[in-house]
Amino acid sequence: ASFGFRTVPEDAKESMVKEVFDSVASNYDLMNDATSFGVHRLWKDSFVSSLRPGRKGPMKCIDVAGGTGDIALRILDHARETYADRETTVDIADINAEMLKEGFRRFKKTMYHNTPQIAFHEANAQEMSAFPDNTYDLYTIAFGIRNCTSIPAVLKEAHRILKPGGTFACLEFSRVGNPLLSTLYDQYSFSVIPLMGTVLAGDRDSYQYLVESIRKFPPQAEFAQMIREAGFATGKDEDGGAWTDYWGGIASVHKAVKL
Ligand code: SAM
Image 1 (cartoon, rainbow, N blue to C red):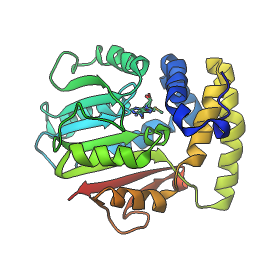
Image 2: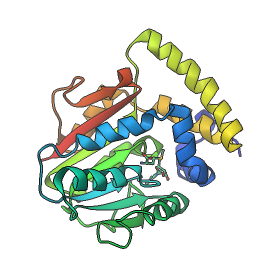
Image 3: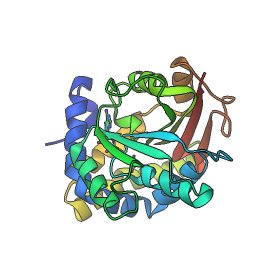
C-alpha cells in the first residue's frame, strides 16, 4: 500500500494508521532508537520524571496510544525507584493489538508482569466508553495523538476519564522555532528517516507517513488552545508555561489539569 498522506481522506486515516503500526510493530523499538539516535529515550525519561513532582501517594494512570509500553514502564519504574511505590497502576490503551502484544511480551520480563500494576486494553483514544468518568489521576499520551483522526475527540475523552484535579500530559513531535534548525531537521526527516525505514525495516511508506503526520500536527500554541477548549487549565501560553519544548521544539510536552 502507498501512504501518500496528503491524498488520504480523513475517514480512511484510522485504517491506514492501523496498517502502519501493524507493519512497524515488531521493529518499532529498534526503529525508534535508530531514527532518533536514542534521543526518544531521553525525552521519555524527562517527560515521565516531570509528571509527579513531590507526589508520594500511589497514582492511577492511563497511558493512551501506549504501544509497546515505553511510558508505562517508565511510570512504574519511576514510582518504585523514587517513591518506593509499588501501588501505582498503569492501564495501557492502544488501538493496535500488534503493538499491545509487543508490549505484553516486554512486560513479561519485568517484575510488574502478573501484578495489578499493569493492564492492557485495546481501545480507540477517541472513544473510551469502556473507561468510566472521573477515574484517573494521570492521563499520558506520547507520540500518539497526532495519529488520531480527531484531536478534540481525544481531548474530550481524556477530560472525561480524568478525576477532577487529574493531569493530562502529552509528549509529541512539534514545531521547531529556529529557522536553521528547522531546515536541518526537515532535510533529515524527509530523506534520512524514510531511507532508514527502507533499509532497517523494509518499509519506506510507513516511515514516510510518520514523518508527514508530524508536519500536519498543530504547533504548540494552537494545540494548547485545543486543550483549554476541552475544559483543561494550562499554564500561561509560552514555552515553560502551557508547554515545554525539547530540543528547540522537535518535541514538546503539554500539561494541563482537569478543573
Ligand atoms: N506511546 C508509545 C511510545 O511513545 O513509544 C507508542 C507511540 S506510537 C508512535 C503511536 C501509537 O498510537 C501506536 O501504538 C498506535 O497503534 C497508536 N494509535 C494510533 N491511533 C490511535 C487511536 N485512535 N487510539 C489509540 N491508539 C492509537
